[in-house]
Picture: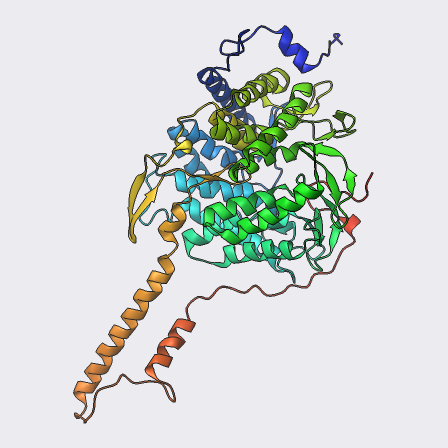
Length: 577
């Protein structure tokens, strides 16, 4: 076996010659055009490797050059990469993949799927691609964006998840069988993020389809978490969805909790919902009071506020980007720079980093090519233009290419200390990591539109404005055009109003015809009413027969011991060790 010299990545990069476009001795910022092309090449190396070696499986195994199903059996990487193709400008491949997905993806399968992952990757990916289809040159059907094949696929996938919400609390199970619903022995313990990460996709789906059930269940789940917070304003990371009792009481902003906070902010922006934003701001006060220390965020006991784990988790690196969305730029930059020092130390973010010791945590030394720090850099660069943020992008490109690139794609880094690799390329690498890197280096991308350009789309219901910017990324980096929600939101109400008018018109027409055939009688003519009712009461009855907001029946499932089966998402902390 050949001798292998292991050196820290920072030293390795210092020893290697600078690429064209990297900052020179004068400290100039990285050249965005150079790194934009480097990122595009990274994408196609990974994407082509998936198509050649792994499709139709969910994900690529880059060390053995084959594929495997991970979160279901959906050709997941193809769905996750679809909107990235358009952001990179590849409309022809976008159009081809749309056809492939319609022909090959089937949700009527006997598979136990993560409710959370299926929502953010599959439902979110299909919704985003649906809303971007016209921009990608797809020939859309009449009624788009309120109809279309990708929208129907997203709706079908989301309906497969609805049985998970049939609990006494309205908080969903973590896993559902796509064919049979919730398995009788399914654990009732779900992580906080797995309960509170639906409002972006489900509200979008309700607005586009006119069916309120999706937004309704998402809002109920959000409210139940809000009502379950402790007296000091914190939430734990795993809860029993049957009883509403917290099972894991460590509170923080990372694994198992993260996207709950993210969706309060993004849901508030997407839906212009002041209540959701007020909820987040209350949480933000408690988080600052109890978990923030020197611009790091620790884990604390949710009822007492005492520190339980002084660690930084790589998933927490989304937080500076979220802070930027509420305008808290100074705090965001300070926290970002803390996280960036960890990246510089290892050439990536280890899953867990012990803050007092300044080193990795045992068995948490890996970096699965996560996007969160790059995501925050993209948001903050849009807000500040600080060249330090481009330097993070440069470092990420150099690190990932030097350590992770193999013949068949990019491999998860199993250990940042010795650069050992693992045989997996998560679909989020193409959905998020590469996308945020590209957008960091592409300031004129259509995603960054400031409203100076837009598309006016004629629908059967009137003119609709799309593509004006303000895209909301779901937690899998699938962009949702918020304007699209207003294209279809009033469709059903307007349809019902027309139906009321038509009923009144035909009722009048029928009764006048009958009236004319009868002997004329004195007094003004009145349309007939039902026995004991007035005509206005009849109209009220008609309105009451419209599709109401669906109430989901309660489902009683046997409670399983927590240790028998863990939820699929997040790290569970059972003690303070």
